[in-house]
Length: 334
Image 1 (tube, rainbow, N blue to C red):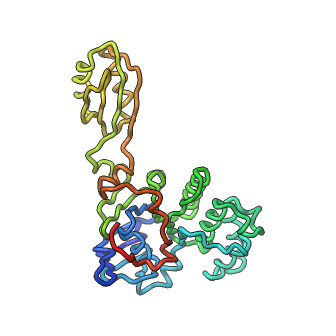
Image 2: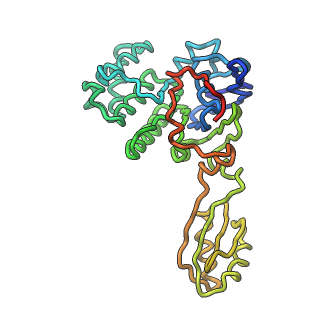
Image 3: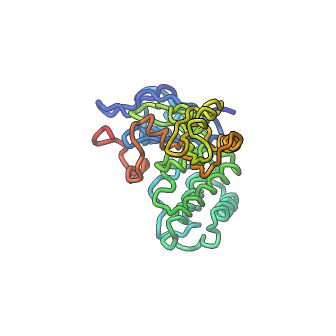
C-alpha cells in the first residue's frame, strides 16, 4: 500500500509567524487518521495546504501521489471535504444539492443518478431526498454533507469537526456511517476533532500537533504507551492484611506498581482491563476476599494533556471552518 498523504518538512509562515514548523507525515492508504491539537497549533493551516487552498512556504505535500501545488486539479478530484460548518443550501432539496456537486465533478448523468440514490440510501435520506434541506435536523444535514463529499468517489475524505454540535445519538450514527463508507469505498479518512472519544473510537493512527510541529504520532495504543501514567485498578479487599497482598501483586509481570489505599489496593498496570481477572483470581488464591474493583483507564485525553500541557475543551471547537475562514491567526498562541 502506498501513502495517501505525504508531507516532507512542510513549513508555512505568515509574516513573522510560523504556523507550521517542518511537518513530515506519511499516512497509508485506507487509514483512518486523526489530527489533534489545541487552537493555534497548526491544524487548520495543514488542512488548508492539503486541500490546495494555500501554498506552503517550504517543503512539499502530496495527496494520492499528486503534488498539492503542481497538481491542484488532480488533488481536488481525489478528495472529498466535509467542513465543520453546515454549508448545504437550505432552499434546495437534498437531491438537488447532491446533483449540483456531482455536476461540479463531471460525474456522467446516468452514473450521477445511480450514485446519488446509492448514497442517500446509505445515509438514510432516500425518503427525504425531495424535501428542502431547511426541513432536515442537524444530524440529517450532517449525513447529507458526508454523502455530498463522496458523490464523485474520492480516494480520500477530509472531515473537519464532523460531529460538533450533534447530540450523542446522531454522533454515533455519523461514526457508523464513516466506517461503512470506509469499508465500501476503501477510503482514506483524515479527521480533525476535539472529541477525544471520537478519535479513540475511530482512528487507526493519531497525530498530535502543537506549535506547528508533530509532537506525537502513533496508534492510540502506541500513544498510551508513551505516557508514564498507567491504568489504575482500585481493589477493596478483606480477610487478609493489605500489605501482604501488596507483596504478591507487585511480583506480577503485568503490574507496574501497587500500594495500599485504605483497606484495599491501588494497582497501576499498562492494560488494566486485561490484568483484572488474574489479580482477582490470585488474591482469592492467597486468601483475600475481593469486595469491589474499579478501573480507571488511561484515555487519549490523558495522552493529549501529557504532550500539550492542557486538555481540549469543547468550546475550543467553536472556531471558523478551515474552508470559510482566513486561516491566519490574528494572535498567535493558545
